[in-house]
Length: 94
Image 1 (cartoon, helix red, strand yellow):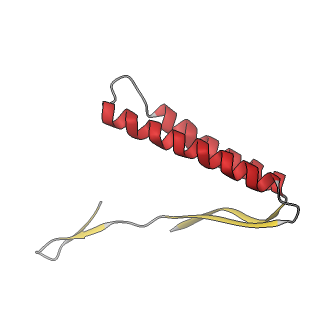
Image 2: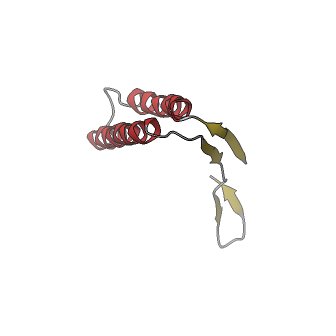
């Protein structure tokens, strides 16, 4: 299964606006997963993801705002079911 999120030609500013919305949604998701009862390991993982996304956003912002030509952007999410096969030959989707 796949979901096409972005497809088309955009100016640098339009491309930035689209990427900004997607990355902000991911930042919000990661921030919402940090709760009081989270383990220290989970919190460190989420914080590292947040830092990575913030750095990527800064890099993308700089690159896209320097573009003077239209950009072709395609963003698709691919979803696959993970199948585990056991010796009995039975398959279980997880």
